[in-house]
Image (cartoon, rainbow, N blue to C red; front, side, top):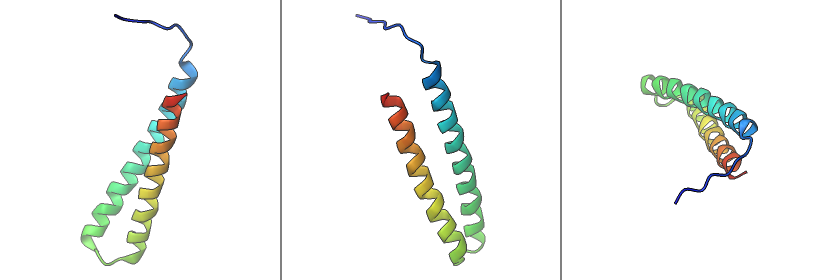
Length: 70
């Protein structure tokens, strides 16, 4: 059985696209920091930056989840 519900999802798609772009950008930054940490694993500034990026990733994932629930 297939049920089709009509509706305009353009706002949802735009919001999800924006959140996905943010997530990709953060993941790219995180990859860069990880590469730098391989060269200098004791760099506390890089470790702090990685922590901030991980927190940002979690926040963006939660935002994406919230957008999908709407």
